[in-house]
Image 1 (tube, rainbow, N blue to C red):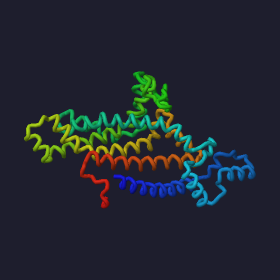
Image 2: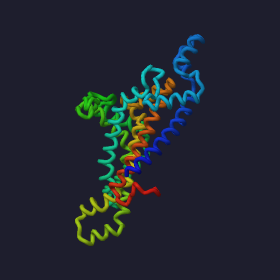
Image 3: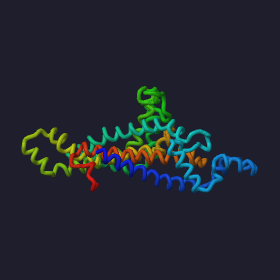
Length: 325
């Protein structure tokens, strides 16, 4: 396993370097932040001084190598708009986005797997058909529209939950979190459910398909012939064998939730990374955009590594040290 992790780390570094080049060139080839950050009345001397201060007077290849050199030391540049560390700005907002993503993925697991099992074990019942119908809606409805409908129903008409903001936060190991206070939890529920809806539908369909396929396998038929309880058959022989694709999807969707929580954070005014990146795009704050994208790439690489390790725990047939992998 140690050799496998070393090999994957080497591959990850290569992927990070390639992605850094693509991200850097793509972002720096779009627009001119000086036109946005400076007043139209600024004279040429002030423009030249600002361009030099931001390092934009150098060729693109030289800017990239400076970026790589600084990134190796943990410095992803300074924000044009805020004048502070781009990575620091993102990490300030990261706990809020992470809390929202963790809550959304937990909702997907807690609701998606039991409902998917129910639909898979009783596919012809009215409850099974209803679950699948709801899952289709989860796939089809746009996130921003669902968010607005949730606000209108639960915040405006019923008045049960707040419409926006993060609410009261409590420090946990020095990190502000919302779920430890009742006010913060109420603010968390609507955006988390809105973010989780697509993933709940996805987990339902994956679990249902896996359960129906597992029920046809010989090991399940043999377990029934041995007279094992139905709960044991489902919990041990069915659920355990369908967890691998579910774990893969949930893990990758967790990265996607963090990366694409922008819409939900905008609708519910959640103070996470999404709002920061939207504001940065508006003013072409290139260091913040590049730092955000690089953080997301690193997160996806880490998640893939964790998924491979979990594979070996769920299925002994997966050999992490196999050189043919």
